[in-house]
Length: 502
Ligand SMILES: Nc1ncnc2c1ncn2[C@@H]1O[C@H](COP(=O)(O)OP(=O)(O)OP(=O)(O)O)[C@@H](O)[C@H]1O
Ligand SMILES: [Mg+2]
Image (cartoon, rainbow, N blue to C red; front, side, top):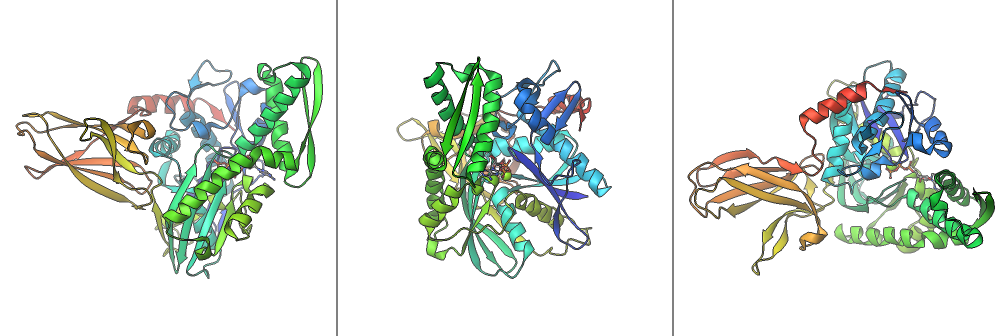
């Protein structure tokens, strides 16, 4: 069985294509349509979901959450509560995925082998790789990594195919990440024209501004710094989210807070909340504008703005979009489910044996969200990032460039591969170093053709060719900062097997 998984910062969802050929959400073991991406450790048992989220208020030290933000970060490690062991974001995600897949298997009465997993469009190479590793760690075969807004577009199209030649903007603001994609749908083709985003902007940040406000108010009144009180902080995080959600419907909310025998009730009005999040909302506006111009369109050419992600329920978002674009954003999609539904459609498109994969002639064309390049010396002798493959190019894509050996009989070629838009190496992200053994006897100045590509998952590959002898030198393995070895992978897989997930 092939399924689609939306592995979210705060909530995850799973979907499949049912016997009628329609995408359908699979409920979890608790009968819910989404599963909070939170882990509670009880001895050797990892409990994932609502129970864990509730426990996070009173048992901060026993729970793990918001790990998606740390994907691809090699220095992030957290203690696995109760066990004398540290885990990284990949392992934590693997535990969450295990719960999702186990429950899906239960619901389907079938073994799940292959998955499509969604990622924010703005996820870079390291974060995409980390997502694949998490799935592989629990023995899943990843059919494809698909961008969340693209997945939403796919689900939107699949729901009703009578949508011909329209440009849509997909505004996806989740718990931890923001994406915007401009997509053209025509006949059976879904073509992403441009995409951009921010992998550190979401509802989590809305909660944080409320938290900071309350901390300041409390300190003014009592001189107590809530940051020193872990339990109070966790309770405040929970109340801040409740406050934010309430303000989507109410005019004000009272946040209770107490620490060291002092307690206070802090009133947050909708106006105040809007003021507090204004800068964050503005950041999404700037990204929207850039993305639209990258697509070569104006808002007049856009037929619809689709809202995706739980944070689009904040009224200020719709208000901003409407006043900025002149388009009243559409809430026709279920913002919590549509990404998983699209992933299920994508999975069925890749399933030759599924009789229910009826819409098999959909063509999805996506783009890369970051430019790719290498560091080289400029004329002034300084390091410079030179872009080889521009962002918003249809993937898979590749671009070649010739480099020349600088020594007689040079044995090795080493390239720093970058992701980012700037020429200054300081402002781009070095994915890793690609090393290559060269054949012996090459004279100085021998041309080596390097081809850098983004594969269908948006992951970077590099291959080289010895032009002099017309010989392919094969793949240049990228030594990524976040790489784990095959041995480490096996060890982690073994270790995870010993944890019971529920
Ligand atoms: N009624 C509401 N008003 C305001 N915010 C809401 C509301 N309902 C949910 N949210 C917020 O939406 C966020 C969760 O959205 P969603 O489930 O789409 O995110 P996610 O998929 O986990 O994250 P991401 O896609 O960024 O990885 C949370 O921050 C939550 O507080
Ligand atoms: Mg999401």
